[in-house]
Every structure is written in C-alpha cells, then in structure tokens.
Image (tube, rainbow, N blue to C red):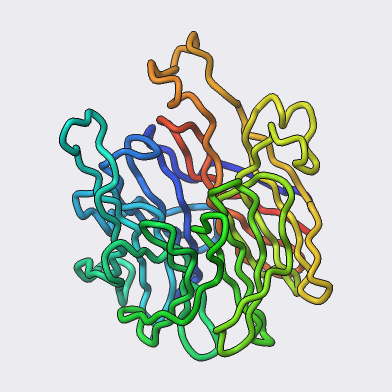
Length: 339
C-alpha cells in the first residue's frame, strides 16, 4: 500500500474532525465536526461536497443543536441523503468546576437535494448514540453505544428514522465505537474499539446478525476504527499510538511524532489481518515555546484519526481523515492510495 497524494481539503483554523463520506447523485459528500477544540461544547456538523475529489464546495452547517454535535454518520436511504450526529450535553455539576457529560443523543436529518435539510429529530432513546451506518442486504444497520458499560450494539432501520436493536456486537473490555461493513455474501464485519486497553477486535456475524464471533484480537494499541471495502479486501485505518512498542511498521519518525494512522488489510477468506502502512502525524507534539502553543499542555497533543474509505476501482481508494491537535487547528485531509 502506498500514498499517491495527500492534501488538506478543509481548514478554517478551528478543530475539524470525525469524518463520514458517501457517494450520492454523482458527488462525494463529506460530513465532519467543526468546533473550538476536541471536546468543546460548541461542536456542530458541517458538510462539503465534490464531483472530482479535487474541488470542494463551501461548508454548510447541517446540525447545530446548541450542545456538542460530533461524530456524524452519513448514509443514503430511498434516494435521500441522511446524516446522524452523536451529540453530547455537558453540564456543570454542583461543587465542580469542569463541565462533564450529562447526556448523549443521536439526531437524524435528511435532504432530497443536499441543500435543504429537515429539522433534527431524535433517532434513538437518550443515552444511546449511532456511531456508524452501513447498508445491509435487507435494511440499514448501525453500530450503537451509550452511557455506562452497555457494550457495542447492532441496530437496524428500514427508513433511517426509526431504529430497533438487533444484537450485541461486543460487551467486553469497555467496547464503544465500531465500524461495520457488509460483504456481497452478506457477512457482516465489525472493527470494535475497546476503551479498557485500546486493543480492538474484528468480529463477524452471519444473517440474521444475532450472534457474533471474534476473528481478530489485536495485540497493540490503536483506536478510532475505520473500515472500507477495496476490491475484495477490507482496508482498516485507526489512530496509531506509536509509544506502544508492539505497533507494526513504526519507525523512529513515527515514535517521535507520537500519533499517526496505522492501516492494514483484512482478508475475509482467511480471516487474517496484516499491517500495510503507517502514516506519522505531520508535526507531533507542540512544545510550550512554539508560537502557536496553548497554555493548556493537553491542547498541544497531536490529534489524528476517524477516517472514511471509499473504493475508486483498479486498486485505488480515497481516504479522508483529520489531522491537527487536541486544540486548534485541525484540518480535514484527503489521501489517494493504491493497494
């Protein structure tokens, strides 16, 4: 695997992150969060579009509920373009000085033209959120997690608006985010984050998707899972934690930059994953003496992850992701890669 091109496609000096991209009506549509920093309360969902992956439209704000709208998931249903947010409500509790999570919700909107959108409506019961949406053989399916250690769940919908629980994908080691992807043979794979130790798993399920089996347990730390089908292989991408000595393909530059992306290829026939490419953060940790450093040292930490992958044919694919810092700026990038 190698990179053919890699460039910034959106920069406004703020923290832009958490991408989701679909192909609809001859264009690429890309949603992402725009906020002051990684966990600021002013997050909102923006969308840009392109017909060639080179020139992109001006951003449009599509979800701004007044709380931290983040981690959008885009999908298509009945020729309508949908977007779901994962919105955090943080409040100041009695006797505390730092706002912390009080509630989390998923809001869903849709559009018939990509310009005019419905008002946000709740997609799930409060304290559960949709994180990834994939089109299955009979319906839409989503990975869901929530407050408390409920595990990572699979939900389904026939119209993108009403959802019902199907099964539990994983409920071990504080499982949360999961990228899910169907193969033409109707097998469903999930690339699941485990917050307890940052060592994810790949799980597999067969119709009707009520039972799951772990097929890969990773032995090195990484998170922010993404999966895309390129040809007949599953390409994975996640946030690399290069200080973990078990991280494959990490060289001295990777370890100096501390964060980056680790990409791999999963063969659905052999059920084996192999590392393919390590992409180090372009700068690494900012020092307190840097002209653009923040007084809060945590805001100087490199931030990179949450990609979307789409097959372009002939072994080529596009990967959009974000790169920057926990504070500002953080930019949206687009890379063209080949297998």
